[in-house]
Length: 629
Image (cartoon, rainbow, N blue to C red; front, side, top):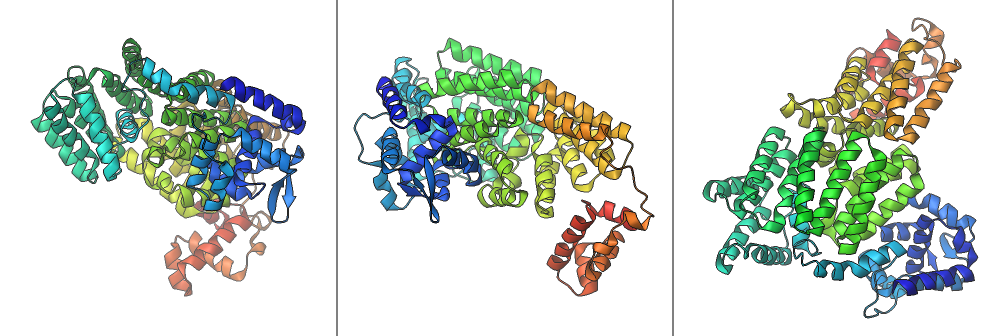
């Protein structure tokens, strides 16, 4: 089948040489567009690919430049019906029907054509090799746990890897599937009736709210000792406590799950408690301990020929390497995991790996490649709504922000993925996320988003003050929101993640420069940021800081101005209303107090304050008070 696909593509290139000019990402874009029809809109293709419209703009420009598509009124169209038909035929009917089923009106479903029995799910040669062999590879290994692609396997794998706390309630069909899979797994160590009873105990962990799940997990641990059910309950409790910010409790129950798993769990589940514990240790920046647990899980999975656990351990190890700043090694590990996951038909793990790889591509400034990887990560999850991953959502936001103005990027975030800001999952996994969100929010003049990000990471820092991992992240975000030099200096010292520390150095240097501090202080922090970025392979950030250093070295930045000088404070640009509000805010009043004093709504005061900040080129009330002092 693969040979036939490649031959077909070679024939397509010979017939339509303009397609050879397209990158892999643009090629996938026009293939997806071909599914929509000979005429299409960018919004339709974005919906089909599960990405943002803005992220497709560079790919559209490429397709336009190659002459493959063109504008047709308020829509886009292929240059010829023959090109459209040839591209559509490259997408197997079964894949097209699946993608179009849940995202398009019914008339679009016809574009995929009739289903062809036995046709492979292929978008690109590498997908063809992965999906066409997934079932046979899984079955030939005899690994019955590692290669199932159903709801039950996703839930259990995500639970064990600490990607899930059993938080979503199950549909009745998913509940039945989970019960059946659990009974099958547990029947190896007990009789069928007992296995069914134990499966019912576990299924209940997926059926309540967070408090109810915690109570039920504790009850299981009280009554059932050294059983598979108790080990699973310990993992659920560990994940729930961790997600709630009770990090010490999360670690305690993670270690308890590991102890119970040595004797209690079915053999093919035994690698996962180490993976779950290793993931948590990595999030705390305890890289050596994390690598030890993940290495133990990987070794056990290899002895058991447990292929899904091997791919999961590769993803976990890739995260550790990313955290330590070893980007090249991380990319190689993640690429291997994606390749293996595709051969097993494990689309969830493949999506996870691709999403993480896109973040590495962004760090290198390879934005087109990152957009392609995010799209591919989304296609891996097509038709599997329960398999949504924080990594994919975050990568989609980050990639889109590279192609959108800040306000549109914020609209994407709060409109499509609001839980990224309101839930702790993102901030548990990425110590630089809160600071990045504050920067984005300030550029978009959205103080509420910035404050939400700060509050979210502060909730993680407060219960774990003894551990500086989240304290540093909270200090960093808070300092950016309030332009606080001292807090940024503390964040630089306390960050365990090299990328987060480099970002804090850059933020500190830029803040000092805005304040007009000595060039020596500014340069010291910016050079430290540049060198850190270079050492971890974040070439895009290193280039950005280097350009600032060059301007600094040539005297491009003006010397510190005297706030007492009328020329240094461009108050003439303010309207009378803005000037009154500026003086009241500088005097320490809140927006609500100013609104009461002036007889205006808080919304109106907030609008005027944003205009004041923009006109005076400042970012905080502290800077405003300094200007008016």
